[in-house]
Image 1: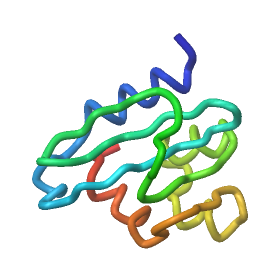
Image 2 (image 1 turned 90 degrees about the vertical axis):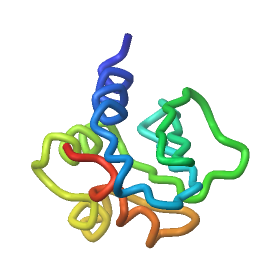
Image 3 (image 1 turned 90 degrees about the horizontal axis):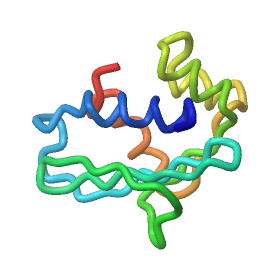
Image 4 (image 1 turned 120 degrees about the horizontal axis):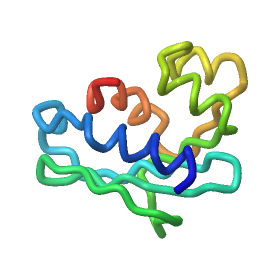
Length: 103
């Protein structure tokens, strides 16, 4: 199991269903060549490997940036402003990640 997969499993375990409200969204993550997505619907979160056919937002970064965000060394907005994180789709949705997961 790769370090990236372990990190995703940790993130999934720290999902806050109360913050999900009525969300029905898909967060696609492209971390180097590793692709995973999280489906959030009905107050639950499911992590899946691969590419979703129609994600709500895609977050694109390298493994170092991913680790730095998850460890709290930087936040997503700092990574975005520094050019270390790109988004495609609903960029404002990406800002909800910190509410949905208590890392």
